[in-house]
Length: 385
Image (cartoon, rainbow, N blue to C red):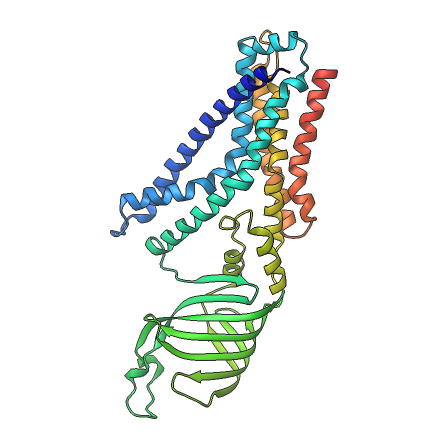
């Protein structure tokens, strides 16, 4: 196929792809804005400008979910356009095969998949972090922060602390129910985590007031996460002005965090850039956590160019029909149905991979491979009989 014809076909498809993607993003932005307005009702400090800002920050990440549909539907519309204007018939009559005709479309789709993987995803991960920061600041009262590094697990949790200044006398005691509580936070660190028992080793807890004034440090050999508490053993408590630590065999440290809170925080796929995922996955596994969800997500991103190319084949198999032939509408509806089936199949297999019921590679790559083979077989049947 000549370069001029290839550029013409690719240009038509790129234009339709951009228009459809922009239209879908506008719809997503509208619904997100309405939802944020609902959540912000009754919060005077949240302005309309802040709501629009949050919607824009969230848009690139949320829009990635609908990109396969944009690739599929824009390809179907482009093929329908070319068929209706008889341009497709002229191209085929010139001696070009369907595979030559589809090459520019497949190339554009694959490049778009690479663009999403290497550019859109990293940009979306940066913006979604800013969105989450604004959401916690303006719409949520939670102040828990969780992070995983090679040095271990770090937690930051807002707590209420007993006001030591309320005591009078060196050995004065106050009824716990009558103690004055002041806002503060604790920083929790553990070097290793043993799964699935959730047994943490070499644990250190630091307490600070909200003005970052240090109050005390707790060190424990191990800690087990229970319901609303950490069960710590071989504990040493270092007071702010104390030199000799207080030794306790068993100590219950209250917490509002659950296992689900921690797992969802450090495995948040949206906030992880494609380029940082391999290192972060290695860090999780070294620390003792299950990195299967992030592995599935990473390989799913790698499979995007193949998935987008498969969408072109599926679109061509249902749209490249002569205008005189009946059933075009039904075939297009069937193509839309295939797209949604692919989406649910992909979600189902990824869920199986996340729970380790099937291998990660199979969970991430099989949806794209199945779609590609289905589209390829349909086109082979259409082109070569």
